[in-house]
Figure 1 (spheres, rainbow, N blue to C red):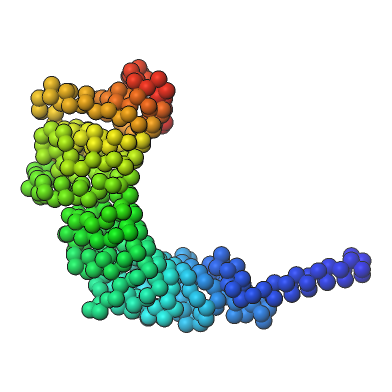
Figure 2 (cartoon, one colour):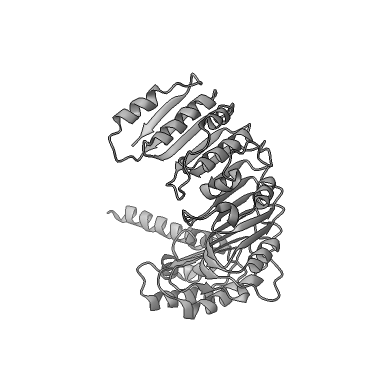
Length: 417
């Protein structure tokens, strides 16, 4: 390289270096937030101006990954003790045990007043959430996994919290009720796979999304709820009577509180409660705004099927339907008067249904029969997707599906494998 070109290259390098070094601390922090913490800390060797730049990162992501346990503990301690700026988001996950250090980390973190906290430490037993975390007044998002939740005696609530997600946790009815009710701005609530909670009371005036997977009765006071997913994660024994487990009044109260939702996901256990083992033609609420339904249903159980039909009848503006066939956990089959059943199902009309899907389709006669009914119920249907999961020869089943009459001239049946 000539002397002139070399001088120009060195000059350009110096200018570029000066430009990077002269960036404001908040810009450097934003750049470093796009790296993992270990990479961000390494930038301190670039120049004197970058030496402490990582201590102003607004977003902190910590993953133990391939770290040795002792090295990861040192890294977390260093980040929490030396960080100088505002922490917008703190996200930590790992599979190794950190029970001895967890309380210390949470105390240091609470002094930083983060707006978002995500903790996914998976080693057992669950991590007991210390009281200092419940004192963070600026918290807007909280996601905890594998934890034990016990509220402190004095809990002022999270006044700004809009998203709360708890997974694989244990607590009590009263602690969860107080936790939710003391979050007046809450818009999204997800509670999945939990122990110690039998009755869930949700009082949330601004709640838009409710996602619950667990064995629990729900008392709901959420006038602005738009999306609800209610799933039962344990199979009910064949000899169990769902009506003995849950009273009819509970189901009516729950459905009445969901009358304004736009999307509804529901599993078979609640469908069985709806029908009480007989043909139920009128639900306690009209779902006038309901546009999307997700069903996990066993077609062999007449109570589930008929309750689903009742739900369809009471959702006049339904536009999308997604169905997942489930195995039967009940000996109940189609033992009622078939004439009455046929008469009832003929009343179903899905005038606004545009798209539908059946996932995990195995080609059973009851599944083919449901597809036939669906094609006869929906005059505006444009697309029906069927995901084939059968283990037998599918050619005969496919021939049946493609030959089914369709009330909608635009309806397309698409089968994927």
